[in-house]
Structure formats: C-alpha cells, structure tokens
Length: 421
Ligand code: EPU
Image (cartoon, rainbow, N blue to C red; front, side, top):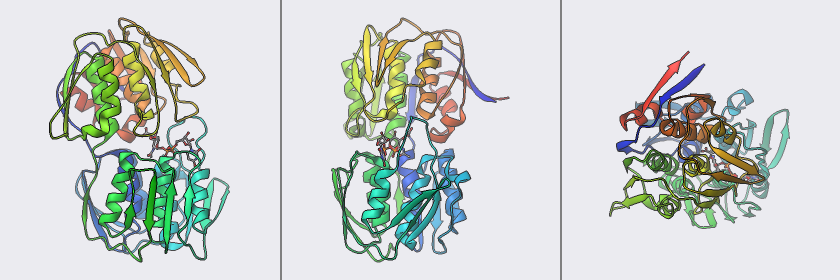
C-alpha cells in the first residue's frame, strides 16, 4: 500500500507554480474528439485522470502525441463511435463527458456509468434532460448509458440544479447540433468558461459562458488546427493558500488567476490571514504568524466558496481560535473525512450538512486514510501542521488530481515522503 509519511510542524515557505486545471482538462480532452482533425493542448496537468481520458481517446481511435508531459497533440480524424466499457469509465467522474462528445459527433453513445469521489448520491438526470431536449433517447441499463438520436436540433434547457457536469456535457453535445441551444441556470465555474474558450478557438459558436445563460449556435464542423492553453487550477491554488495559512508559513503562488480565488481570499482575510495579490492578477502571497480566527462558511457553486475547498478549509478551522460552522451547500454528504481529522485531534461534530468545528491549539500525527481527492489534500495539510508523524493512506485519490504533490510540498519545506510498500 502506498502512503505519504509526513513529519509535521514545518511552516511552508517559498514559491509554487499552479498547474492547469484538472476539471477544465478533463472536459477539454473529451471535447477535442469533436474535432475532425488535430489540436494542441498546453498546460495540461500530469495527473492520473488525464491518463484515463487519453486512454479513452485512444480507444476511440484518436492519435495522441506527448510533446512534453504538459503539452499534447491530439489527432481525432479517425475517431469512431465505440462502446466505452464501465471498467474504464468508473475510474473517474469526467468519463461521462464522452456521452456528450459521441452523441454530438455521431448521434449515438454507449458509455459506462462514471465513478469519481463518493459524496453520496450523484445523479445525472440533468445531463439526460439536456440530451433529451436535443432529441436523443437515453436508456440506462446494466451499468451503461445508451443515448441515440435520428436527428438532433438545438433547444432550450433549464437546469433544475446548478450542475458543472450537466452544463459541460450539454455544451459539448450541442456544439455540432443544428440550431440554437440555450442552457439556463448554467454553472459559471472558470472551467466552464475555459471549455467554451477552447471550443470557440476550434470553431464553435458559444456565447455567455461564465453567466447563467449559455447560448450555443450549432456549427457544421470544428476545424481544429489550433493550440489552446488550459486555465490555472483554482482548487490547486486554493489548496496551497490554505497550506500556507494552516502551517503559519509564507507562500507565493504563481501562474494563478487571483480573480478566481476571490471566494477563498475573502474568507482567509476575514480569518486574519495576510493575502496579497499581484497587480497583474497572476500571483498571490499568503502568510500568517498567528492562529486564524474562527469563521462561518457555506460552500456554493461559483462564485461562492468552492465545495472542493471544504476539506482543506476544515483543517484551517480546526486550528482556528474559536468555534466555526462549515456548511456544505452543493453535495448531500461530503464530511466522511472529518472522522480522519478527528483521529489527528480535531474536534468536529457533523449535524446534517453542517460541521461544527471547535478550534484546537495543535493536531497530533497518526495514520489516516484519504476517502477522496480533496480529503487527501486536507490530510496532507493536517499532517504538515501536526506534531509528530502522520501517515496518509489512500493516496491514489490524491494522484487523480494533484501533480507531484509530495515533491511540491517538499520544495516548500515540508518533510513529506511518498513510500511504496
Ligand atoms: N446534480 C444533480 N443532477 C445532475 C447533476 C448534478 O442532482 O444531473 C447535483 C449533484 O448531486 C450535486 C450538485 O448537483 O449535488 C452539483 O453537482 P455537479 O454536477 O456540479 O458536480 P460534478 O459535475 O459531478 C464537478 C467537479 C467536482 C466538483 C463539482 C462542484 C469535475 C470532473 N468534477 O462535479 O470536482 O466538486 O463539479 O463544483 O469537474 C474534485 O475536483 O475534487 C471534484 C469532486
């Protein structure tokens, strides 16, 4: 079993550069298969979710050439409609974007159910509602999703819940569909805007991404033959911001978009942490000398405080002065990791969708297990702050979304080692 071994209580200091956004990249790679030709993608994070996207693209007949670990050329000229089996799709959430791609390009798709982090029920009814509005018939049986259509036409879709995945999947499916598709109550995350920018660069006609109404005017083909650079990862940057604050360190985070970090910065400032943004909005410095003060936080779709920062923030609140309330506003259940934080000495009581966190002076190291990706990041931060040794198991979750995480924390002064047993 692989684990991270962390010797704690080291303030993190130095500079770290943010990689391309996982949740943009895992949408852009499937969308690239709409192109009847080649494209180049830069600033790609080197993480296991990307390897899995590439595996599916190759299964469909795409030719992928890695120019560097962060830059690829994809030739989708020979992509065909093929079944994508559930043993590949269940390894990550974004596998379901291939439904949008295959439906949009070929009018039919057979794709296994997606996997991803376990936050209770994660329905895909809004994706299906969108595909059906475009004219597809969708059946789910034996772990597979089958979507078929004789003819698709643009239509209006109102999302009953603000869903990142449904917004992306409907956008991908609609790009090549004749007529106008309107997504109302759309998600507004930076990765939605990034996907729209990528598709427009390749020849699509999408307007309004980043607002709650997205209008897609169908085009006959995507010409490709262009290069696109993926937006910096808001959540990776936020993870380093919290690590700086929790370890009472001083980190400069480069290659980020500070505007995307506003919901995180605002809370850190409220808690007495120092946050300095560069004038051109691409660097942020976070430093702290004292214990942060308590805060009440509710996670919400963008531009609210991101649910994907909830576990990392729980670590900071566990070390804060006073009692904080952390409420989950996106998922039914995202507090499994609190049991692991409690093993490290955090005092947390979860009632429904709210965690009541009584701040303690310090945490103390022990073996813990990551239950999902961001929980893994939180446990690493907790280990860096805790007295003594912390072993973090379940690190395959962390590898899905953070590139060279141990090495990068080590460069900032953490005593962390990846151990393969
Ligand atoms: N929902 C429905 N029906 C649907 C789709 C979603 O009821 O058809 C509900 C979900 O159950 C949830 C809420 O709507 O309660 C929001 O879910 P959303 O669809 O926005 O989430 P997602 O697309 O499955 C993406 C990210 C997650 C991130 C969420 C919210 C990817 C691959 N995943 O998931 O990222 O938490 O948006 O921002 O983009 C992570 O990176 O660690 C991660 C979990």
